[in-house]
Length: 115
Length: 114
Image (cartoon, rainbow over all chains, first blue to last red; front, side):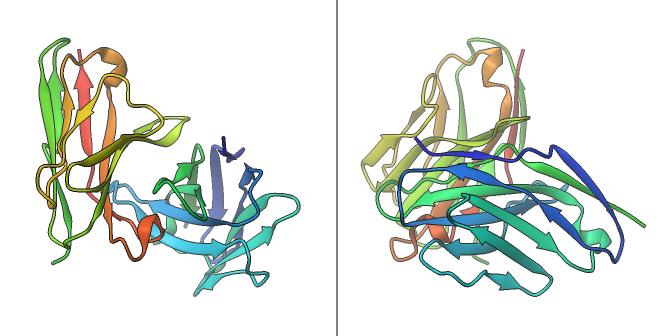
């Protein structure tokens, strides 16, 4: 079974600086998807970024980018120019390429932005 | 507005008292699923449905039931709730075209079982 591990329960960063959230996963499959979700205090789940495993190029969405290391099974999220609105719980998630319509989530990392 | 609506948003109940958390989507999505979120565990899938009358177990189905009689609705039933079912519950839907790559989540239902 696939597992996703986020080893940083909490992180903090100064406003306008850069922070990187770590995620590792375990799978025997070669094709899959990886995601980062944001959960602000409102509890709403918001998709931040998605990466297809077959793509070598790292996905980016404005201030959010990933460092995808397939061989190391690592998928970190970098947030540049951190803003107060970035404060949230962040979840890393894995999905198989085909088959079950399920996301396997990590434990989450709570990000605090210091003004 | 395209959305997934869950009710109730908050509920406190007692052990053994049957309850239903409703979930409705207005996007004509084929796929619907339930997740529970617990501290230190992230979100885990309880049940999912690929279409009307098609449901299957996720990773933590014990103590839960679901049904999909209509495409838009996917209620989660706790026949005899226990304290270990105290959790934050999310319903999610997606189209057959995108699958779980583009999930629309409900706002969550906070359930406390005493």
